[in-house]
Image 1: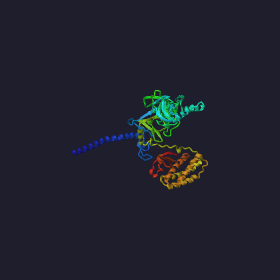
Image 2: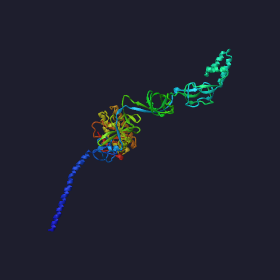
Image 3: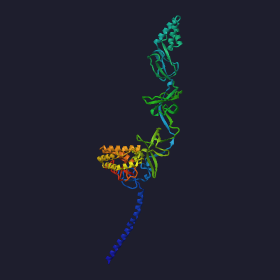
Image 4: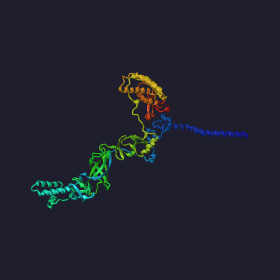
Length: 569
């Protein structure tokens, strides 16, 4: 009896365990379909892309059709944006110190900075020369910078020739009654040496010649250069001093070749002098040197200044600024220099686009105009109201490069034209003849898929024989040119045994074949246009195929599945 009770007890426990298990695990199983349904909805809205080829976007996971890598889910921020747009959230922008600016049109002016120095006005510079040949016995002014007045004695000269001329005068005086012409000629000879009438009369009254004559200043000013020394023997007209009037001076600014087109007479200049700190002067360009120095490669722009108080000294360094409006009629788009990335041939900026959780940035090529110092005029590429990165540009570009998107160092190549969109006028008879040669083209394509140069030669030769028999008299000029290109490429393939050279000709052949086939009516069976972006240094190339399956003729076994189907004809 006790044994039966134990059996019933064990059975009850077993039933209770089964019931509890059903309630626990069975309930969980009932929820699985609902969770699976939510996951299915999430998968439908998810976009998948390739980390190496961001242009690839699919609605389901799988392999990249170009390189075969596993696709990764695209972030929600990037779902509605272009594949070349890089998204940063607000926190990342703050950490990278990324700043943006909304651009607008404004009056553009170029600030031209000039360096130069103060010089003497050449029109007020005088070379004091001697009018008496002889030896300098004494210099009364013997250092530069000394002020002299007009008529002031500058030097004393002993002249043997002048002594002889005075003796001739005294001798002529003795016979002037009989030969007055000789007496007058002797006096005129002394006058030619700028001997005054008083000095001539003094010689006559004293009855003996004057041995030393004084050289007086013809002009007043400051001695800027000593050209002779005591004891020098000078011929008539040789210089002794350089004398300048410093009441008026010149500021001579250096104008380099790059700025010559911007500088012209009449330009206003604000300039400062190192010897007078804190004061800004205003002047006007009065003359621009028409000649460029062969040694320094600069020209001079002149500003005239008054210096009656003698505060400004020649030789002082000057710095000037000219504000030059580029175009008084049309406003320009001007952006800071910090926003621009240079690659040598290209200039890029990053344009901001709104994203769900942050901001998207896309590289855009621009055409630069005139440099304005710390900014540039934009001729093409931007419009008023767009927002660009002006600080942290290199940080954004570095992140974009890591994702393989269009950046400063990674230019996305774009084909100039699509052969499949070329419009041709093909007679029906020509369309039928061309259709009969397509099997030879596909045989040629399969030879390249198998990397078989000999088979490619044979297929190209066969196709060349077929199309050579075509009548093309009813084709237009453009169509005839493309048809002849097909014949040339087939001939080149049939004459070469180098598979890589053959493939290069096949690339051009396929472009022209695609243009013709795209204009054939009622193709049977359908033909697919396929594309590999990695051919020809990532410029890409197309080919025709009867199958939607990718079998790459440009790489063969190396990358058999590289490419995707672009269009079905």
